Amino acid sequence: MQGKLIVFEGVEGCGKTTQIQRSYTWLLHSPLFAALQANEVVNQLVVTREPGGTALGQTVRQWLLNPTVQSPLHDRAELLLFAADRAQHVEELLKPQLASGGLILCDRYTDSTVAYQGYGRRLNLDLIDQLNQVATNGLESDLTIWLDLDVAVGLNRTKRRGAADRMEAIDLSFHQRVQHGFTELARAHPHRIVRVDASLSEAEVSQQIQSILEQWLTRWYPPLSLTS
Image 1 (cartoon, rainbow, N blue to C red):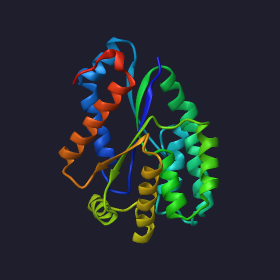
Image 2: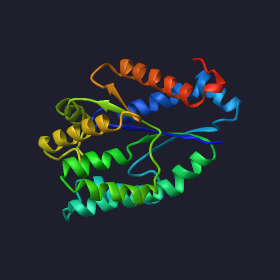
Image 3: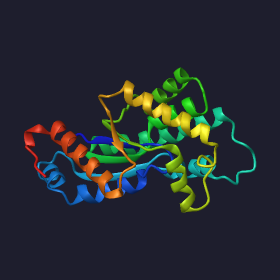
């Protein structure tokens, strides 16, 4: 039994959290997932996030996103904290779940570090690649769903939610560089990154994602002849 790691990525306010929850609910009640379980290919559906997918990660998340922290967090320290959270997440949750046949929906993973700390913070991309390798021990996403949205639209959405976290509060040019990073990543890794137009309605975005998940699940598990 071998699970799959499905990651949701995008700029602030792109709708990742909402779409992960919608995808979870849809999958849980779909004939696709029922067939996977019946054939003992996948045994459970897991939702997690970075940072914060473990007990240690919850503490790291507070350090990284809390806007009221007194001392400014240096860019390299920020990068290393994300890497520490990821290393713990991979070993404590992701690898054991995948080995036991879990289908994982993860809010952010390695591409976020490249986009935010590499393109956004302008840290060395080769260094980030090395750190990601160390933190993941080579574990890549099987599928990354990129919710592509104009950064100004996304930031306006976050403002309607209330107080901004530390990342959301950074200037617009930073977020534009992050978006450019995601664009470059999608161009470089078409074998695993699939773009979704996140400017559409919540229901329309969900439909796009459901179609992608159906395609990839039937590609991964063709002997089951899964139908939706």
